[in-house]
Image 1 (cartoon, rainbow, N blue to C red):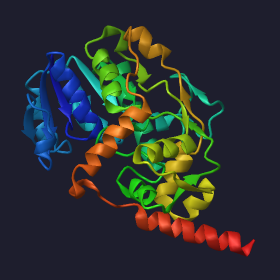
Image 2 (cartoon, one colour; image 1 turned 90 degrees about the vertical axis):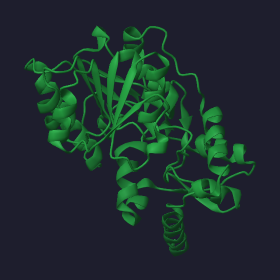
Image 3 (cartoon, rainbow, N blue to C red; image 1 turned 120 degrees about the vertical axis):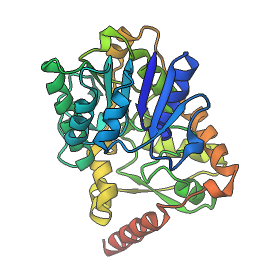
Length: 329
């Protein structure tokens, strides 16, 4: 299979490129070239910008069997890709997000039939619009399309927490400092290793059962946010000092983080992967969270330059505001 990834050096797309290469695909990556070292060996790098319609048009003339778009975040992005690849590609795959499912959820159990809608998070609304643009093109016969929805997928370069994906929370745990967990920490969520997502995604490429359909691709392991942070602590060897703060309070202090919580992570969400298994028989997630997060922490701690700290200041600001509120009571 001749495959083009729009993107290909990020947390998720890099794993998908590796999986496709392992299955014998000819893989090209469109990248702006900021992190060429992250490209898997064997992939062909094409320097360019997915926002450049002319660059996409040039690529489309190469006639790929499938194009996987990791860089489309709204309807305009999808429309640009459809103009380039419509009638020139065997299958166009939009990487959407499981955050598109309705919030607040009517049920913790999510299937692909769950309605879409997210009043809390602009990112999710952009993805919903992107899906709508693709559905219209599929309905009109302009392209063969598939929608794929990951949910908080992490690899070796991410430490997934409710405060971000950098080294901030791990560092705070190691130093015995308090960390913030939203709500009472008992909301159920699904974290998926990028290698598992990749196997599900690649199984959908060139697969007629996927044409015109939407799938979420997630692990079947379900953890509370308390368990997620406690597992990180066990790997580090320090029990985390968890402070529970309501999600809406966090949103008042940090609107960006609050949108991600109220638009996704604050709710209990368990994904039914039955539809994926019907299309890709034998699919199962192989990397449990404890194993995956141990790999991530080893990667960060192998080189101090990797230990980026972006969330520490915000975590401290939330803790200080919460302490003041509790003192007032």
